[in-house]
Image (cartoon, rainbow, N blue to C red; front, side):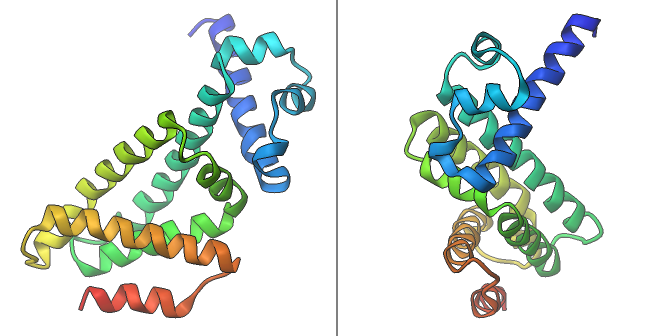
Length: 181
């Protein structure tokens, strides 16, 4: 990577990081192009050069949030063989990260109806289900692919319940655990 490409990559990353940080305090309405460029001291042209539109920017925020989330999940499941413990470790990592970054999670929920984001959510859930499928195979569940998709939906719903309560919901987490018995 040459100096110009490196500088462009750093600027793009800084715009995404600023958006994730601002989402915590300002919500979706507050994360405007004007606020972002003022925060970083760059021009609007720089923003539009990197993202083209606010919708593309929100997609970049979504991807970065989920890549960080996936890193947390991967670290949590790494020491476990496929099965119940691995499923619960990954789910706990997901729920904890959603609570840790609840402003970003809330922002992404607000824009989920956007077709770009909706398609990305579907793709992300499909990918995550393929990661969970071996766990259901190890548990000898019939239809492990479908069970994994349903599990992803339940864990996402649990995250919403915790998001709305603004804290962990032990009964919800216990119910998830019970589903795997």
